[in-house]
Amino acid sequence: MPKDPELPPPSRPSILGCLLQALGAAMIIAMVCGGALYLYYGIDAHYDHRDRISPVRGRALIPPAATDITLDRHFPIDHEAWFTVNEKDLNAFFDEHYGRGQELDSHAERRPLGRDVFEERYASLGWVWHEGIVSYGYSAANGGSQTYIHDSATGRTYHRSIYW
Image (cartoon, rainbow, N blue to C red):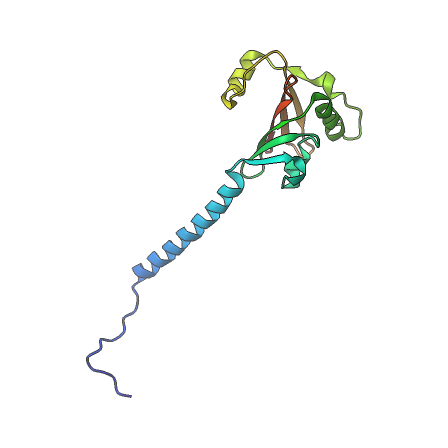
């Protein structure tokens, strides 16, 4: 079949055009991946009880009797959580979870949280200090740090999990 003399020869895309297409594709992939990470780590999740919390690592650090749980995951593995639990159940959880086969009396290890320290670290969370707020601190077997701040009057508890 003869070529039509009026059609121009096909042109090849320029290198700049190819680079712009590749850059556009890379930006779209980055935005999709970033959005997925934001949905997983950037949004507080609310749970009625701990059985629905995923991953298991986050669930294991919250007492089984806890209710009204808000979990805020931080990339890659840290988290903060708010929940309600009575002090007896909280201490039973500590004794079992952090005792690691040894006898632990977590109630005796709790520390009153002074007003200055509380206001410096926790007042920004919208919490008001009073005499009944206590602090518990534990080290995880893998080197993490677990801090629990508990209001014995209301049962409201703040948990901060940090790994390094």
